[in-house]
Structures are given as C-alpha cells and as structure tokens.
Image (cartoon, rainbow, N blue to C red):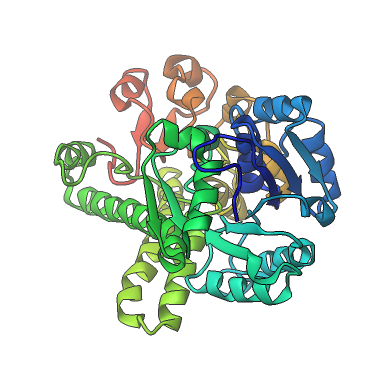
Length: 449
C-alpha cells in the first residue's frame, strides 16, 4: 500500500476509532499536522461536543486545536463507522480499562471497535493500534482483520503506542520524544512515516520493531515509572522511621546521573487511568506467560502505592488526636495530578472519601476536577475556592500538585482556618515559609521537620 509517497508530506486520510482522551487528542493533532481526519465514536453526546469544538475533558491547548481542525474542515467527528471506509489509515484509540473484579486489561471495547471497522475495510489500508494492550493482542487482531475484511490481505496491522502525559498530551503528540513503529513490512513502516512526517522532519527518533515489542513499550514505561514512585515512597517511609531528611536524600539521589531527579518526589502515590491499571495488567499477562516469580515485584509496587493512601489517612487521624469524627478538614485537590480533571484512581479523592467515611466534615476544592469528584463521590462536599474549603478547618490536606496550591499565602490562609495544621501530600509547600507563618507542617516521610 502506498500513501502519498515517501517523504512527500502529502495529507493522509485517517480515521480515529474512539474519541476519549487518547483518540480526541490524537485526532486533533493529526489534523494539525495537515491530514484529513475523522474521529468515530459510539457516544453521540461526546461526538456532538467534539464537533462543536470542545473536548469532554480538560487538557491544556486541546480545545483550540479541535476548534481549528473542525473550522478548517480537516477534522470531523461522527458516530457512523462507515465514515472510515475512505481512510488510508485507521487508528484504534479505545480504552482498555481494568476488568471488573480482576487485574487484567478489558479488551471488549477494542474488540468491538475492530468488529465495527472490519466490514468497511474494502481498500488497501493500514490499521494502527495505539491502545495499551497485553502483549500478543496485535497478532490476534491482525488475523481477525485479514480474515474478515473485504480487502483481506491488502489490509495490514501495525502497533504505534502512545506515550501521552495528562496535562501535556498536546505537546507530547506534536513533539514526541520518540516514535515506536511495530510493523511487519516496509510498506506499513512507510505509511507511518508519511503520517508522522512533520515530527520526523524535526529529527524525532523512530524505533522500528516487531508488534510484540511495540505492544510492550507503553506498559513497560508505565511499570518503570510506577516502580520508581513506589520505591521513593519506601525510602521516605524509612526516613520517617529513622528521623532522616527525605528531601535531602532525594536531592542526593537526584544528583546521581544514573538515577536522576525526575519522578523522585515522595507523597501519596500515583493514580490516573494508566499507571495503576497498566501495572496490574502487566502482572496478569506476565503470569499468563509463566513469569510468576518476577511479577511478584510489581505486585508489591502496587501494594506500596495503595498503602500510601492508608498512611496519609492514618497521619491525618493522628494529627486530629486520633478521632476525625465531626472534625472539619479542608482538602485541596481531587484530580490525580495537576493540569487534569481526571479523578480515576485518584489518591487525593480516595483519601478525602476515606476521611469522610470516618465521619469527618470534609470540604474539597480542585481548580478543575470538582465536577468529576462530585460524580465519583457524591457524599463529598465540594466547594469553589481554597478559602471555602479551609474555612474553619482544623486540618488542611494538599493532595494534588496544582500551581495554585504551591503559591498559597500561608499568612492569609492562617486567618481562615480554625487550627493551622497542614498535611502536604505532594511536597509542594515550602515548610520553612509555612512554619514561619505559624503552621504545623507535616508530610509523609518528613514528619514534623
């Protein structure tokens, strides 16, 4: 199959199946690169919102890209899978969440997407997987597509994993630090090179590999990050027990070129729609492949991460003299990370809900995620400002690393609370500055230093 020709930079006709976080971002960015893109989804409300020029979630810079793409005609959205028939390349961008009651990835949406697309593959084209899947999925889908598509063997399958960070997804899409092409032949490789020609022209490195290695790329990256975050939290717990200074320790470690300082901040742990479920899915697939012993390490990574939430709740209870029932607590942060409204597997929201479950009067504020927090935890009281969350509070918890919280004035906030005690769950506050303003400052791994 030939699309545009090598290095031509010509527009490629592309369909993107699934317009959630990954699909909507990918579709908008491909349109911004000069391609003709249609995003297809079964959710009519989501499609209508995207067609009107806005994403159904918060991601910096994305709404502007969508509006520009829709306005220029390069980007459109539809619920009809027949709209994919004229495309030269089809990106599978549906979610692969954790199975209900299990650890493995749920591939039902991906299988449904392939089933809906296959009858419309009547011309030579390339199906490209971007969803994060267990290794071995691509081969199964390739056989299914080739046996069911009207174009048969003229339809190839490739795997091109995404490496998006929520809050930075547009930048990561338009200026990736690497591209991975899992392909079986030169023609498929060339199609991907045509699609990504603007990035390649800027020198973005490409790793061409087999389908299995490409499938492992994203989940392996997430497993490495998860392990790093859990390990630094173990170090922080030891520091707390030994009365050592965790911030000095991570500075020492970060200056080692073999280790570096990124993702080396202790706190309440990781969350979101990727790291938790991808780590568990990797373990589940490893066990299926007979790699049980080594997978035990990653089970402990997950356990350490979840334990951080319990440790934060326990510390909050201790700071309120062992009983939080009826005590007023201000919680700052619901999203699992800054610059996102995503509350999936959010440590911040989980901690707030647990404290509410212990009888505390919790008031929660997040710059972007209060709506999603309210839907996920309807018993929690959400408010519209830091001051409202902290009014009369006996304890303040900072649980998401928003810049708004980094820049808080501890002197002004001391005049709002009943008791100036703060638990910094993300190490975003300057403890000396806050103590000078009269605050009792605590953090996991740092104690009352």
